[in-house]
Image (tube, rainbow, N blue to C red):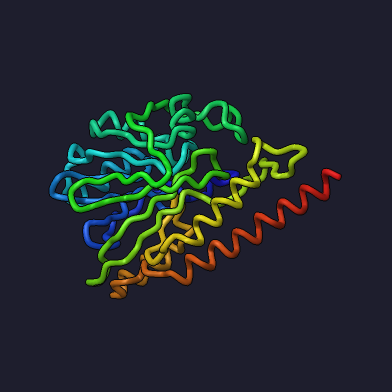
Length: 269
């Protein structure tokens, strides 16, 4: 979640195909991804409460019935990604999977968040299944693996999966979030929750070891969605294959994380 909602992060956009059976159905920056199989569909993230109707409309625009969504997955429990899950769960009848800590946050409707308090509440939704680190969720020909990458939230979950793009099987990664919000305190004297800095360190180690050819995430700005979509529409079938961009994003984020930590530690002395 950004410190403030971006001016146009929730504008409606037309859905589009990223790879075989993988479609973008989210808003202009708040993402949602649809994994299509003959056995039903998987939907990753629900946006804001106001994004849910857009997601449902985008699924229908692609020619699919939202009732065929059998599994709902979550990246994390902030209002701009979990706010629409209650409606999506209600209208699709899908089974919702989430990590234990973020699942508890969703059940509280975002209240009691370690950084945001009660300021970013949304319609509460209780997950049906709890996912653990390394757990695989499968439907039809898709298998997505959960990687707990806490820091941004305590149960932030990055998902990886193989996907065929331009005739070649690639390794996809959907980043939860690696951002440090302005109100977060990383220094041990005032840390927002016990071990937050250590969690970020561990998560960066995870992100850097995971294969990342098709780089996606909870915000389009993380992976240059606007530019890649333009390239896709111009005929570049593998526009979303970007291992170098993935590495660069984590290098930049890691440097920013350490800069924030050093600044806060210096201020706390």
